[in-house]
Image 1: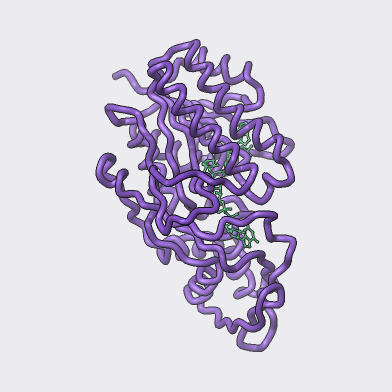
Image 2: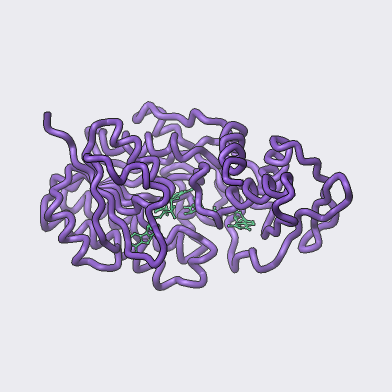
Length: 337
Ligand code: NAP
Ligand code: F7E
């Protein structure tokens, strides 16, 4: 039997873990690309490292030669680009690096596909951050982009250059426009992971306080396991295209905190407002406060995705509820004590 070969850039990240698991189950040979790092970057994917259908290569999206050499030697059927400097807040501190990885890195992959083999299918990990400041109450593939960060702006370039290569060179190049998706394997400095991890520790006496930034932005949160299934389906279509992947539901950061507290049975009472807003526990101790340092120079206030195109064409919809996602994240955190 001939197995399909996939390259995953960004294999060591949250989505890299879920997509690798998914593709290995589908009998793919998966080639994952990792960067050199002073600490072990493969913690999430350690369970795959000894599997014969999983191979790991050193590479970096800022090193065009590594991208070219890997694609030339692996001869993949499909390339999934999940690699990015993916933190919106950090992109204000490292804007040039963010643009080199998230924008130019994508162009380097597309150029390698164009020169090596135009039959390779390509997936680009786009984001709801491309919508940025929007007047649309629900955002679809037709909503105008208005990014509010170096991260979002670099992703708009990546999105459009992917469309350009599709149209100019007839390459099967597709964009996902994924809204926030989380899991127990989410990076530590994203807000859901920070909230779940901190509140679980506070409940168990292992941490004193959780300090957050803007409590009132609204996000449409799904589960990464659901979303990688959509990513896969995007590359299995007859024609390439762009797809919003979202749940269609949103809530504020504060509502996410309250849901998590309820699930772990931690009683909270909110007081104050603005930078002086805080929450106390049953004994009157302040366990949540707000600090300016976690605010961004620009904020994206409201994101809610319309995934009806994905439902119609990919036959995809989000299955895991926000409450079940939080419960899974809480259970994982408890096991880390
Ligand atoms: P993540 O956990 O931060 O993973 C990012 C991956 O990119 C990691 O494997 C990271 O490697 C790798 N990477 C970073 N810089 C690189 C470079 N210069 N060369 C090669 N690899 C590099 O992100 P994620 O949540 O899995 O997201 C996957 C993709 O979807 C990203 O492109 C993100 O921007 C996009 N996205 C995510 C969401 C979401 O809510 N999760 C929503 C929309 C779009 P290290 O492990 O070495 O850092
Ligand atoms: O912030 C607010 C923050 O960093 C969510 C990435 O995967 O999804 C993610 O980007 C919201 C923002 O995710 C803290 O200001 C408050 O309004 O968890 P986040 P994000 O910025 O939405 C998109 C779709 C991606 O593409 C990205 O790659 O929460 N917030 N207090 C905080 N955020 C953080 N990180 N930390 C806080 O303490």
